[in-house]
Figure 1: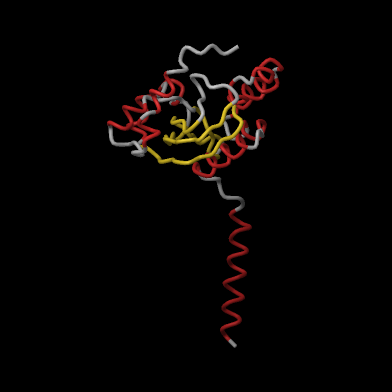
Figure 2: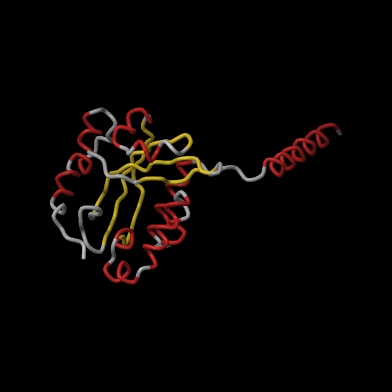
Length: 186
């Protein structure tokens, strides 16, 4: 007789505690996965929602421009995207590759080193076919994890410093990408 009462009480407490807590903040890892999934589905407006407010507005303006749509500039160049590798790096290490004056205005920055497998319309210095390696920098904005930067980084340095993934495509990324450094983007 006591067992059903205990089970009911525990169930009630769990339900009640979830409703009191409200919605949990989405983890940085989940934000990254959702962002890449939105890129893969060409959900540009959704993808912009994962960024800090200042960047969201710029991205939405960029996406709306007909010329950017026509010539597949920026994110619009992505046909497919799949997150294949990621790891969080110590912020003290990653910050050497970031513009400090910009990052310092945000709370609790975190740096993730990611490998994203792209298929793109036109290969250029920003996006090439195959796995691309870069940082996704996350910050807290109004209590939610948001993307603030996605800079390209010197992958060779990341590998040399012991933070690489050890894959062949990572080791050749700088060489593969440099072929497109002089590519003009119309």
